[in-house]
Length: 474
Image (spheres, rainbow, N blue to C red):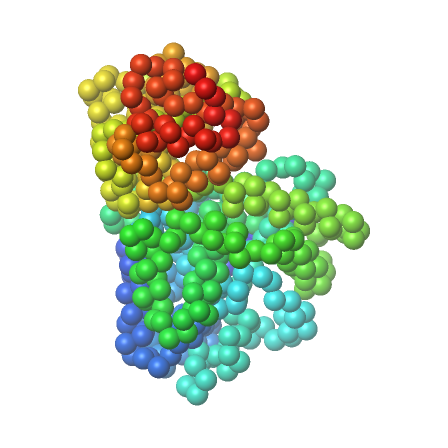
C-alpha cells in the first residue's frame, strides 16, 4: 500500500530555509509572483514562465539565475504540495491556495498540467534512467529540453488508475475526494481537510488544479502572446469568473472514451516503472473494466455534479440545537427564490455575504435553528450548502422531511437567472442527486407556491421550471 502514496516532499537548497512561514495562501499571491517574473523576463511566453516555476522546485535549480531568494522561497511554499497530519490534529493540505471564486486549488497540480498536459506521459526508459532534475538554460528558457516532462509529477489518469486498480475487487466503492475549509477566507493560511485522504491522497484541490491547468493550457494555445498573469486574472477574477465552470469546460475537452484510455495507459506505465509496486495483475478484460469504472465514477461523481461551497467556507454559524436527519432517497425538490436578497450575486464574496445575511434572518428574526434552505444557488456559478443533503430543512412548510429546498438568490418575479445558472440545477444538481442516492429516479419538481400559499419562486422563474423534466402540476 505504501507504494501508492504520492505525497511529494522536496529537498531544496539552503536558500529556502528563509521561506515565509505565514504566507497568505491566496491566488493573488501566486499571480503577483507571476507578474514579477514577467517583468524581469518580458520575452518569455506564459508556458515557459510556468515551467520556470516548476523547475524552481528541483534540487539542482540555481535560483540566482532567474529568481531572487525571496521569489524562490515563495515559489517553494506555493508549489510544495503535501497532505500531512500532525499529532492530535486533523489532516491538512499544504501548497494549496484560495481562489477568488471560493474554490481551493493545488498549485503544483495546476502548473504541472499547464506544462505537461493532463494525460500521463510514459517513457519507461527515461523514467528509470534519467531521473536527474533539469536545470534552466539561459538559451532555451526554463529547461534544456523545451517543456520537459522529467519535472512533472503523476497525472490525473495515474491517480485515478491507482485508486481503482487497488480496489479492482470492489469497483463499486465510491471515489472519495475530500474537500476542506480555510482558517480564514480573508487571510487564509491553513487548509484543513474534512476527512482523511484516500490511499493516493486525492483531494478536491488537486482535481481543481488539474482541471484549471488543462483549461489554462488551452487558453495559452489559442493566444500564445497573452501573459500568464492576465490569464489567471480573467480566469479566476472575472465577472463572472470562468473557474466555477471548470467541470463543464473540462468535460467539453474530452472525447468519447478518452479518459478511460488514458487511465489504462497510466496503469500500465506505472506497473512497468515500478514492477514491485504490489499492483494486482489484471487480464486485458479486467484492465478494461477497471478503467471504464474509474472514468465513469470520476465523471458521474465529479464532472457531472455541480460544485458546492461548504458551510464553513461561506462562514455559516453553528446549527442551533441538534439537527434532524433525513431519510433518503427523498421524492421531491421544491424550487424557491430568496426575494430578499433581491439582486443575484455574481461573486463568492457577495454570495457568501448573502448566505450569512439569510442565516442571520432565519435564526434571529424567524427563530429557526438554521438557514432554512437545503441548497442555495448563486449567479456566480456555485451552489451553496445550507442544511445540505442530510438535515431536515425549514423551506417548505409541511414538506420539509420529504424533499429538498433549493433557492435561487434574487427576486425572480419578472426576470430569471442566466441559462448557465438554471442549468446547474436542472441538468447537474438533479441528476447528481439521483446518482448519489439522495433522491429517487422518479422525483418530482415543484415550485414553492404549489404547496404553500406564496408567490415564491416568482412568476418568471416558476414559468421556467414548469418546462423542466419531472415537473409536477399542482
